[in-house]
Image (cartoon, rainbow, N blue to C red; front, side, top):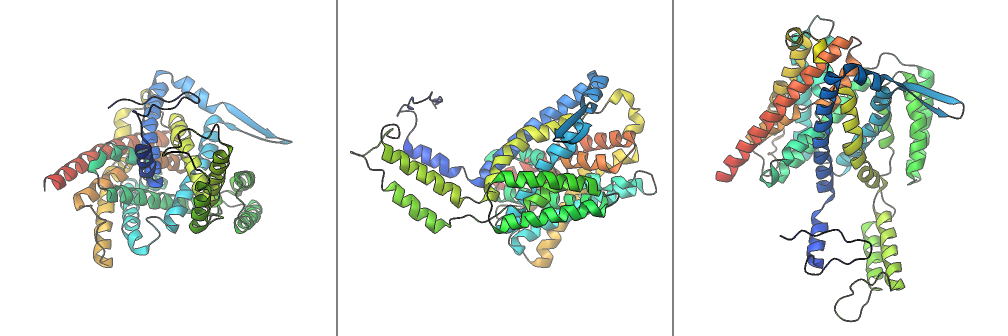
Length: 461
């Protein structure tokens, strides 16, 4: 197959290399879910590279690694100034945008996606609940009565980027239903992890700042009701809310989820109005002969029609979808890799590896992720099918569900995040990182192998 190059400026693509029919087919096939799936899975490989880089950097030059991420960075606006370490800005600042994107995904899934229909949502929600309960119980068993009990929330989370990245390596052999199931399960799991952070990892509440935050939320509600589409309005109010939440005692990143819930999910035009407008504009594009070719540069009427269609597209697309689509590449390709680079470093030379590997924190996190997740996901999914009398999603088999359960044990991003909230002792945080890396690695390998065998058996059967 001949490789098509990118045309420079107004250079047309040769007709023997691409046809209108093939271009239309490609655009139609590139659905919203496929865009989301591709972006997140591709970002997972970059996340892996950043994690490896953090491990190498922290062990080759541990002082440089620590100094870089702990240097102070001050943000000044007028007379107000906020000064935090670079790692703090990444963990509390940039990760707020990650939580904002997660919140948009949760809202979309609850409105029109895999979590919108109670019967369709039953299986991934049940899987998420089981995938949280069993890892937490396993961790608690290992750490019961110890000073490290507070880390029970570390193995409950699923890293959607890593899990979808591994799933993508299996290609088209994976049924579309399994992709939907894993995505919905991971998003439901994220919602559970966010609730755990808000309810169990909040040390104290300052009511005055919380009251200020409630007032900001009331303004955001009014913006939603009046269908304000300008992202700048939500950005400014979100920044003020972030400040209020950070000083109220809640973790500042929760701001991202709160703001996302107020982003309008209805478009200005419905689909019927959009189709009528587009049809009217398309009728203005008339050409002599069978083909128009490249008329946009020479025909003002054609250009005006295209501009009108572009405006109609922006009016029919909801602000929620527009912001989610805009944020996904930034989160996948910048924010999550930066977070991994700042948090995945473990200085092995400063630890007694024998004590570290067999410490209750390490064992609780590793076994919770690698075995608690697949057991909980599979068992609760099976119970849901029996109690609610629903079938597995089309194309799925029980070995595939087990494989998805293993992929759910890749808890990297959210697990690292919760570990930083769980312990004040640096050594416990290091033990948790080792457990997260080990548990996620075992889960990823097992998930890949189980799914590969399961799909091979399905194809041969």
